[in-house]
Length: 243
Image 1 (tube, rainbow, N blue to C red):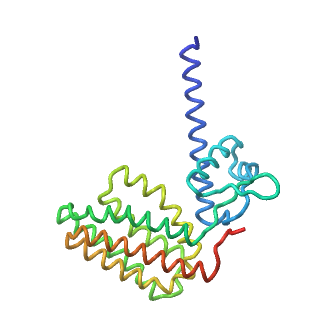
Image 2 (cartoon, rainbow, N blue to C red):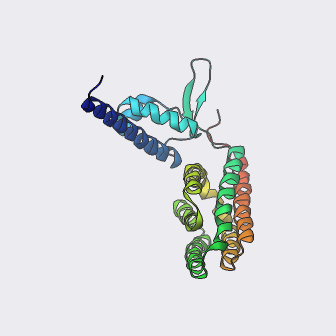
Image 3 (cartoon, rainbow, N blue to C red):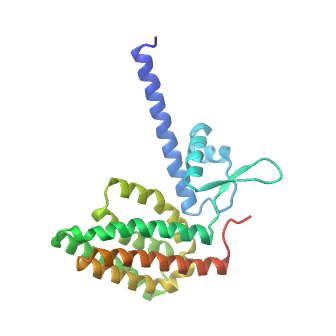
């Protein structure tokens, strides 16, 4: 029968391994989301291990998680199957935007239960971020990453104001997938930023009035229109990472 010290050592080793896998997962996911690992590019365990300064064991665990979450895919060719960064496609974007719209719409609906003062504070913060986006839209030569960051802050405020732990967890798991599209295509959708700003105004107005159903519809519509705008760009420039 193993001693207590041995059991503790094994438990500690498993915890450390789990932490290493999660850290590798987050770092590789960030490389994918920010386009440093391009859509369609081949995934090589040894290269990632060297780049991140870890062994191949946590890399292998992280890649399993990334494949489960749709960031990487198995590609079959004439030789053995290989892993590659998932492509950016019109159908995938539409599905992701619908999912995020549904989650954020639910959070927006719940704002009608906020106290009047809390709702006023939320709308004030939302207006502040939307005004930042408006200025970028008027500039027309703004940093695409800044556009994405401001838009993300706007939507995150709604989720953080009302969502419980389950809804937040689902939102945090899916939102980085949206970020892949937002960062890589932001340079070519800046001309439509004014449309998104106006859609945000409808969201803010509904929340300010305590109209939960209208707020949910406005959020869903913002994401629906965002998917439509993105689809046109993808059709124009092609689906990145297709082989």
